[in-house]
Image 1: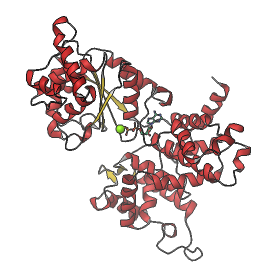
Image 2: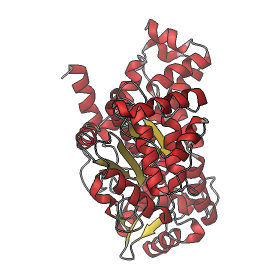
Image 3: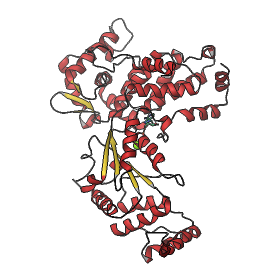
Image 4: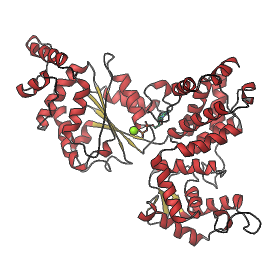
Length: 461
Ligand SMILES: Nc1ncnc2c1ncn2[C@@H]1O[C@H](COP(=O)(O)OP(=O)(O)O)[C@@H](O)[C@H]1O
Ligand SMILES: [Mg+2]
């Protein structure tokens, strides 16, 4: 137990550093030992990029782990003399600014070094460099400035020049492609096509973007598709979410019972961000616990779990919290229980009748008699909605006025517009003591995957 004693007696900042070494709620994962449950996809990215002229496009919901997969793969593929290049698209971005951002990272900004780089390029005659620049761009580089490409041809020339000088096998991650204005897509398309025509260019591109389908991300049916292998990333399976908990706690010598571990993974809804966030907040709750009774057993206690979930709700991203609170506030408390009912299943899309089934179950477990409870009469627990009232409210939650928190398909199926919001709703429900199911309420409960993992880990098989 001495490791544990030592850990929880560390000064606050040092304790934080120990957490940062194993948990990353706000940062993408960059190395395979921390990337859980993505072995197949990682291999897929690496094998695709091993082929000449092929790039990779990773798409999926926000928060499923696109950037983490891209970064981990990039670190494995990039030749060791340099780091992969990482750029983010922005709503006011253009193809010129994108290329500029990439080249800025690839070439040194120091004019003396830039001159050296360029001079050695002049020795192209000796066969050292394959790609050279037009006179105008070359003199700009020699002055230690970065040229802004005026045309796609310039952009291609500049990229080839920079990539060849960056490293033997350069990898560029272009993240958040969904932020790139649609009007620029045609230029991106042309750039990729032209790059594909360049012989022996070692550049590998990994693009990431939020979107259920690739078609929803691209403005038009552009030929870019041909050069990209696409990977659709789904939510992380619960077993892998469980492993994030186990490995992080194990590294700190903290133990967790399987019920609590399982609850963390279930609430997180396949969004690893919430797993990291909950673990972080639980560990801080242990750190802040003045009694320190847990030092005798090494186990996370129920109180730490409870404090952890409620602090996680407060520190969830502002964007998620605001969207949820706005919808709930505009509607009265009843909206919140509807949002919980919408998240009461592993499937993202739910029929209103099933949601009503969940609602009834939640009401049965939590309903209160306004006469005997101290609750105000308009509290959600004091009044059970009829199915048609319930349906009318779901319908309203799809409207602009309520931030379109839900979306319907017009045939009685509903889903969260922002899938990560579902995870937040589950977290919120948990912090209010409402238990949601990961499975269909009518199906038998799935076997306890976390327990399986824990047993397997213990047996070391
Ligand atoms: N496979 C994984 N294993 C462990 N943690 C992960 C995994 N994928 C993502 N994460 C964590 O989840 C959070 C969101 O991941 P990120 O890659 O930023 O998602 P996205 O780019 O899809 O929005 C980050 O905190 C990251 O550390
Ligand atoms: Mg990302």
